[in-house]
Length: 224
Image (cartoon, rainbow, N blue to C red; front, side, top):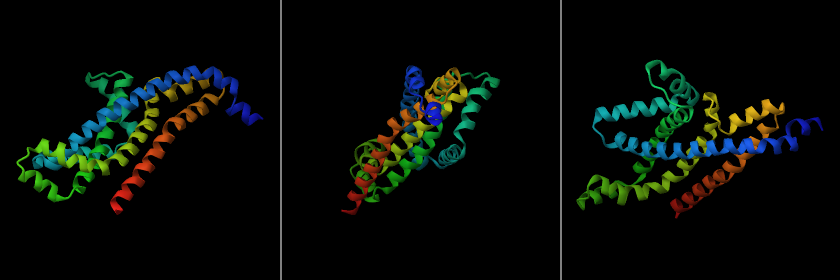
């Protein structure tokens, strides 16, 4: 009974639930904005990595390698706490969006590169023979074929983004985890943290199953 009263106290959970919902709103908004910005920037970064002149390609490679290796928490602290020393200040939401998007762009660039390079070279040659401009051939021929390979890992990256939004509590953004911590301190009971974990599970578990479904469908398509 002590375990139930401590970690699964229904009365505490009911009192904390409105607080958790406010945090959930910030978490969903942060995750969605990050996915849109990071995915778009990652696709552009991928095209630079593949088709720009060599010096620009090298800069793109360095960016991708650095931001794939750099812990998000370290980057978030640098953006929020270090940049003000050089006169650049962002609020907590903007700092979290910037840090998460920069990392997501690096991972997305590699995912898109793998998808584009998976397209047979004959498709590129066919587009060139038709006299298609680069952007038109990408939009009408290459990317529609690459997207079949790209979607499952992109979905997996999106799940990681929503989990990583919990790090935004470090810069005092009132996301789901921050609100759960505040509710725990106010009510002297860890049940709000368990409630936050259940909310994360309810949101992310369907996305995990979606990734599995997309991967299985892609595997079936490639074996035909």
